[in-house]
Length: 194
Picture 1 (cartoon, rainbow, N blue to C red):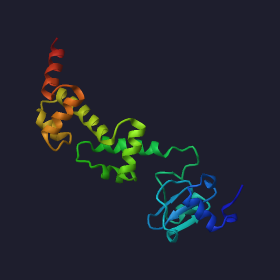
Picture 2: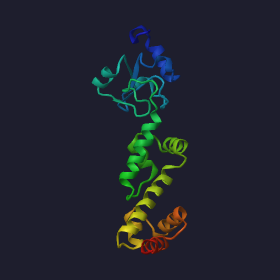
Picture 3: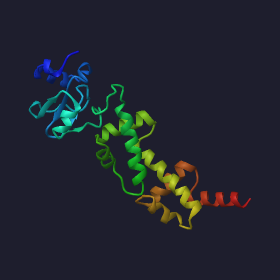
Picture 4: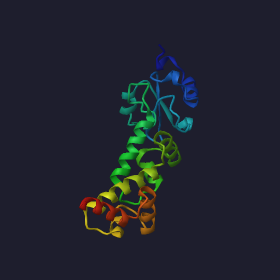
């Protein structure tokens, strides 16, 4: 097996530009401007050659002050690591923990370490819906709980779960349940009585 010391910097640079997985585990590259290190196969944007350093192992890259890429996760041993799974899980966690706030996609993407276009594409490919649709699902679930467990009115609930306008809340609720918030509440109360 090849060792990083047996490979020229020119060869390592070419492997980095070509995202060549044959060199994974043999060397890692780090980008000075981002402070991140990656596997050669990482599909992230090709850095400027002048900003790149090469390392033979994860420990050396970390010792030099670099942190592992969230996309290719060079800090994990397995080559079968699915970088998208952690992005999906992190996105869901961010949304669940912040559903009541205004949350533009670019802010969510920034928190999970990818571009908003990349996040939107992989989230939809993996889950079947966009991050915005997932946010709406979480908000409506919370609205249902509040409608059934509190004395808050629909307007208060809409604002409490993060909607900036009541019409947006009503439209989202109706799209999800087929009912207005007050109809949902009334139907559930009638069911409880009987």
